[in-house]
Length: 189
Ligand code: S3P
Image (cartoon, rainbow, N blue to C red; front, side, top):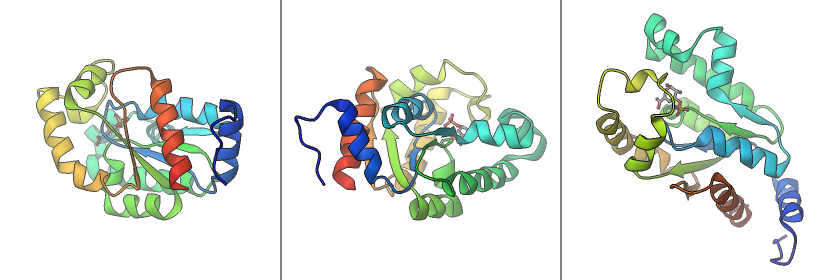
């Protein structure tokens, strides 16, 4: 079924949602807006929203920064994979993942098997601007955020590219990004 251009946006969202049989999983760099866009996308589709980072903190009863400091990144990645596997077992929903999740082989395989991965992408300048809003990211501590983000983006792009859908999330209202994701999902499904 294709969406007719004359249908209202609510009706379009309803038709799209009816065709979704798996969670929509947002992947991409820190600061690209996965959580904010994900929340708005879920609201537009009338689906539940889950932020994997929040769920990990809830399950571990500690912050991600503390997890990195006390147990190291591999332990965090292990918890991240388990939490994402749990979220992927649920009915259609929208899941925002942390920037490194899709880089981990097993986690990426789970997402590709059980979800629809959407790579939210933007240029480095936009990421640098957006990460300034939150100073809790352990990987950005102790260095120049622009350099770290540029290095990580270059390392991670070959993995993000494996997502079947890529949508740009540049400056501008998140509502525009949400609309582009819905159009991309409509075409892909
Ligand atoms: C990370 C990104 C963070 C969080 C953790 C590690 C990464 O999530 O999962 O600090 O490896 O890029 P956001 O992408 O939501 O900032």
